[in-house]
Length: 513
Ligand code: XMP
Image 1: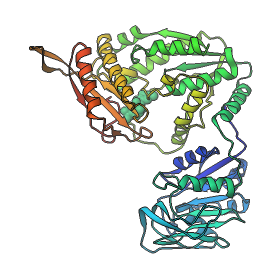
Image 2 (image 1 turned 90 degrees about the vertical axis):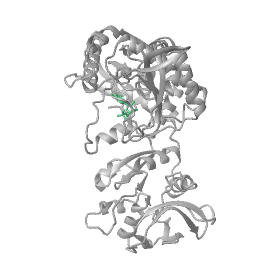
Image 3 (image 1 turned 90 degrees about the horizontal axis):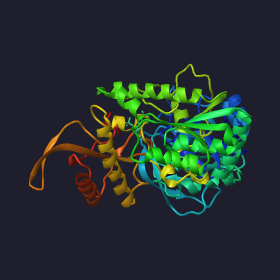
Image 4 (image 1 turned 60 degrees about the horizontal axis):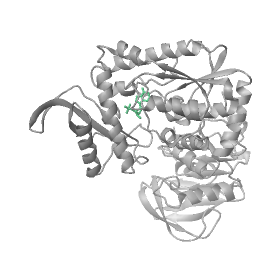
């Protein structure tokens, strides 16, 4: 697997926080590479990863509970700078000679922080608004540390020991509700831990290119393109590293959005100069989907046929030993945790059968989505690809309720294009996670030009989200909804009604099937 190894890395030790990922992202925003590790990591395992600094995350437990998550005490002897956040700060206080009291009083939400002096962590004494979410209270900082800020319920809301390079804050600097939180993190990283903060997307690309070359040597690699951001960026990055040793395979299922197939071919073949096998497989998919209406059966049928076609196409590339995949860091983190209930069987390009004997090349394994977008722009991919909304592997197949036919796909493509055009025209593209149209299998009566109509409704779905695990229906302005609706009815034959889906996730899912 290709991994990059920046010189400076901060490990965020996860004590069960909702916020560990967010902390890692904020550290990266400060141009320091960071990763998340479990709190069960041993001092020896940690040493192998040679961290430049550690950040202990928050967590849901009390340090006084018998099964409270703890850390291998030998880690404290390694001399690595540490910042504890919330639970992490309480743990430092408990383990290093301070006192954490069970006061029975907590602090939740916006709280005012009084700063005692300008210090390493604080640029000035101005009171700050911070976000708190804790019970238990640090009353004595670790031995040798000084309390440098307090809040109404917490005498040692921040503590600092610049000699031993141990720091803690009871509040959450990583959340936006703490306006000066990023500044505090940067002061810890630069002044507390003495880092030089040189991690940028350019430096990432350079080291990724070097490690892809090392992994692949003079071998051949293939990459399945879906039209989505992740596979596109992975392909462009690998192409930069190994050029003509990479061949991409694009299986056009006929279930893509309007114009999308052509755009993939145009971008990769013409602009990026990547060798591309374009399989027009629409007819085979429609044939396979004929009469299939049950959502899981539909997903399975699409996924299986996709794999068969991909195998056929890639089988023609002699001696390809490497398979490029656009796996991202959140996928890596998630696959390391417990199993969630299966809601839908997801199909991804490259969700390949187990008997395939490729070695994986996953150059984006350490990146978050927004970082992948930045890499894509840097590599010269167009905005339409870099800022493309997530699109499910089974494509419009899961946005057509009931049977998937070429006629129904054509109707949905037109309606969907209008939804996206209107979102674009309103400048909402980057604030909305996904906006699309769904075609149900019901009909409605209407009236157009004095004539009775009996047509199909279209359902518009638009959501905001951070990571698709949860989502909120988007509060689109009425004018935007109105122009979408009137354009869809006027421009798409067969549609006589438009409904807006106001279900959040949960209880709804983002897609309809
Ligand atoms: P749901 O509908 O489960 O979707 O709320 C969550 C996110 O995942 C996308 N999605 C998929 N992505 N293969 C994918 O690569 C799939 O089979 C698939 N199904 C849903 C969906 O668009 C949303 O962003």
